[in-house]
Image (cartoon, rainbow, N blue to C red; front, top):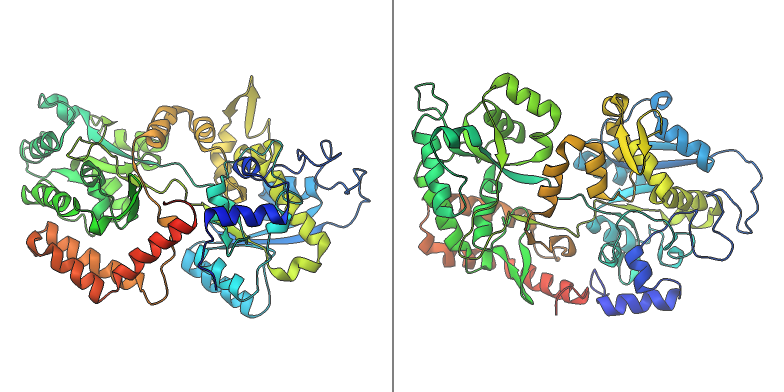
Length: 527
């Protein structure tokens, strides 16, 4: 049996053999809209039109069941996206979101074991591989470029790399959704800086100095020593410190390239130095002692309440209008601004991010192979929400109700703010992130663009599947425990080589690294 992902060149070759229409250029453009394909006489067709271009006879709506993770779906009578899609495509769409990934995976497995397949359902890559091996998934390779369009007015960003991540053994088994843009940013209390005559830190040394001042000099003026320089959660607290050494937070992603060479964060020669820099901050008592137990909302609330002056946090939980109002209510004098990652020995990286990770993979059961009508409606649905018109619907809702548009610019209504949160559930293939965020959050346009474009280490983890014989959960547990010991002085950094030895001998980590290198070479992502 071949490895989980075919060599990039072999993969492309197999696609070309299957159907000549799917070229490298088409892959980059990816799936097109049902109303804008390149096939003969289809330019004016609607998704419900017959193959000859004439209108199909009216028929009863085709029931489609889509299952994925998510929350916030309203009742059917209040779901304007469902209503519009049903009318446009001649379907009766039932979206069945489940809140947690764990619950979702269990429920889908139960349905599959009972033979009660959803018509379109979310899978992880590992699940896609498993189900494909069992012959349970429809091979979509013959449909790409045909029933699933690859040209026209497709507006979401599906690259050939994403299609590889929806593939196994040279065949495409899922429809990928493009990933979100990075949201994390580093924030600092400008009013605290101004009060103490300090400037925004630009180096690791300046970061330590400012963090000390925020901890020791009573920046909030309440006469108590009750503030810390740095707030955060686990090792994401120090993403920019790790980045200053060219190292990723391994618990967010451990594989990246340095030049043409694959590097794993634990084996990066700079990792012990980066851990030493983190230890310096912790030893100086400028870091919230609860970072290893803080939950996301606790980090946010501590920052809002003035418990610290520097924090790494998504702009979506800091800069939205409602959170700005909350900050001012709790602490009227607080002025939070973003600042660039400090420069260190390896440069300047605001953490790391896997830009090529699909936001979601949606699979179709093989049982639908003979149900031509239902299969066509699934393809109509995917093509439509990927087109300019359909993607506009699942991003912004109904024109005149949820938004107005003039000269290509969108203005969202109060109703969109009130009821548009669930629209993302219908963005099956994604959205153009930069324009979407700028339109949906106009007051946060600058910060969303800043977070999306700041320099980060490019992770490769979404292209790596743990091999058989390696238990990633056990390895993650061990590595986190030991790195915590290193930065809190419970284990000397001189024992870092011994840590790696245990990681290899007890947890077979080298098997994981070697497998990652093999997989990435097969995908053409590594020479």
